[in-house]
Length: 292
Image (cartoon, rainbow, N blue to C red; front, side, top):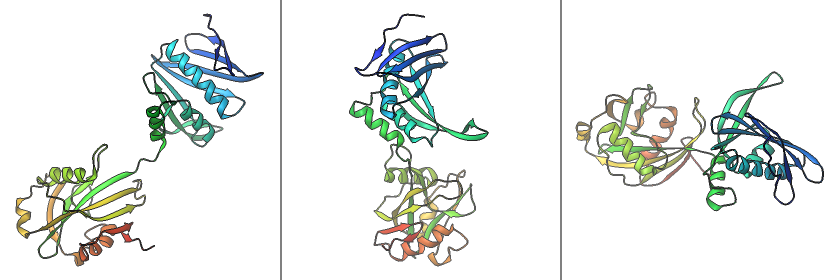
């Protein structure tokens, strides 16, 4: 075993107890033995950090930090990983406060007493900013916060009060132009991009007609949807649009009072409301007005 000086933060002391090609293990002490922290090599340059400690989350956090810095500096690892049961919140807090960003959940990846359990994966790279810096702490918090989809659709009307709807290739319901906003894309830019991709033209957006919250539905997570005003146009606008032929199979004008059975129940609820009062901002939840 290579001689390694004890690791310490002034209170905890970690003494190397095992070192081989696969595992490096430290005994943790603070006046008395508290348990162990290990780094288990999994693939070249990558290690899994595992701990079994008494003394609470603060002790575990400090010990994991010490071992992580040792692994990067002395073992020359480039990435460390922590895997915890998402239901054990104390372990998740230790991972985050030790500098590990939440990266995802492996569904049913662990078998515990005959029961399939999820595994939450947290990772840290050698070049990540550490949790005691502003950018490091912000990145850690950002990795744990909810990621809600944003959808941007465009309501285009003609001079007779009809709304432009698209026949899409992936469902039977007619749909508004637009779609999901990409990461690092502003919603209005996403609406314009989607409209250009689908119809060959990005009409000017004149404002926001409605903001809607969509609950979970048919496997989709919840989302916030912004419905933009694509303006009022001559019915002949249809002849200038160029459906992409892949996602959009066709386009047509439809009267607000004849949408039942053509659009989703969501759009059947909200489109007549919006089209009847296009000069106001509609604050909606699942297609219905928020009244309190």
